[in-house]
Amino acid sequence: MDYFFTYLQSNLIEVTFVAFFLRRTHSVKSVLIFVSLMNSLTHPWVFFGWMGLPSSYLVNILLAEAFAMVAETFIYQHFLKIGWQRAFQISSLANLLSWQLGPALTWFVFHSGIF
Image (cartoon, rainbow, N blue to C red):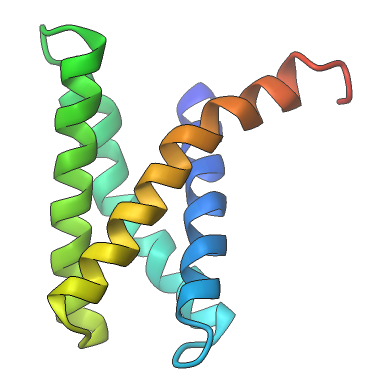
């Protein structure tokens, strides 16, 4: 259940950002489907692969996020037919937001007493 919640919150953050970023060229529904499918491919590699390496947490998270940014840049560029600079901008900002806001969202949901 922990992984599923982590995936959902990361996906929610990234879909929200990408939908805003691509609002002129793609519908929210198409972004939701596209980003969810893409994350279903890359997120397990990040969570179970890169984060499971026998290195420090910092090294693992930097490698994992670098992998996600590069892989998702390629996916955005290839499937959405956008330039690599814009694809990298979307990917890096979406991953940075989910990496930074995810723990805050987890705390808010589980530890703040609101829910």
